[in-house]
Length: 275
Image 1 (spheres, rainbow, N blue to C red):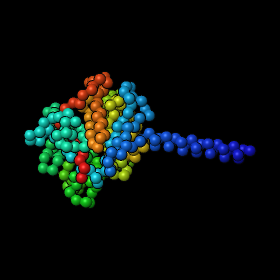
Image 2: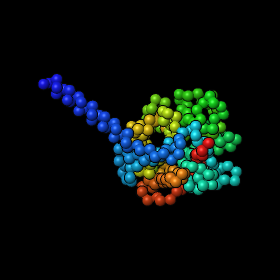
Image 3: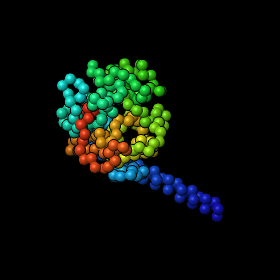
Image 4: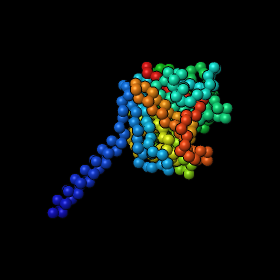
């Protein structure tokens, strides 16, 4: 009788675990926009202090899409809202390329696009987005972690770079310490299959909690880099009849409300176009 009870208990436990795994997978329901381009809205299991707790994710296959950096600091350019950057530059989707300095033009970290240099200084931050490769010895897109990769070699392998703060390291560990401050945020990641991930949440979280949410999600994250937070955080997509705009709002000590309903002008953006 005890053996039978143990068997029943084992089967019940395995069924529950299987159902839990299936439920977790269902939480990420990808919408195919085009070959190599998928959109999902992920309901965060950890609730925010306000908003809908929804995390928007655009998954991009770098073998099918180009990544393009645009800057208001380039000659003849100017700041724009994300949707206008997308329209003017004929981009499928656009997000912030990183935080910027007081001149509202210069990236906080290193930023280069072919011959154009936005900021030539490598700062202490450990991650650098790299795309538009020079040869086939490297992936078409990656987030270089300077603590575990050879930056001195890789900096000669790509044409486009944007440096910012590391969130997830090469061992898929959360690198952001816990704090009380929270904000809307937009980040960029790479999954274990090599896809690029544009990720944004209007609902505010501490960065540490947001990283944990993404690591525990079905996204299969490999690494992750911070881009922007608060009202400046922007995501815009308009392609093949699918239109999505997500606008940041809350930022501790700056705008502690969920009331921002307009994109803010931003100087540097990353867009995508079909190869």
